[in-house]
Image (cartoon, rainbow, N blue to C red; front, side):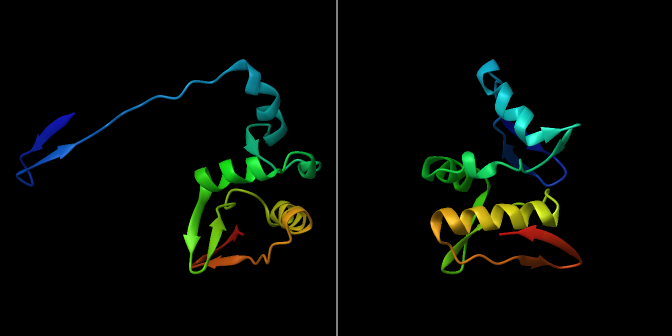
Length: 108
């Protein structure tokens, strides 16, 4: 969609899309959301596979220097420590927490 913004005397372009939710994903949703907040399930090791990690990197990952960063900002530190431990045991990664300016965000 094209729109003219008279304030800045320029055209801008927008694209909208909507995603659908399928009932087959309800069981996964209930694993990762409890009482409306995100959580890492205690048995996360049962769900981390090379394919699931690939999807996760594609969705919440970013190139960072010579490595990659996984955005885990919305989880509590103890949950990210569990996740880090599972990733290290499963894939033998070198993992570290990344600090954020002004607040502690738990990013792997």
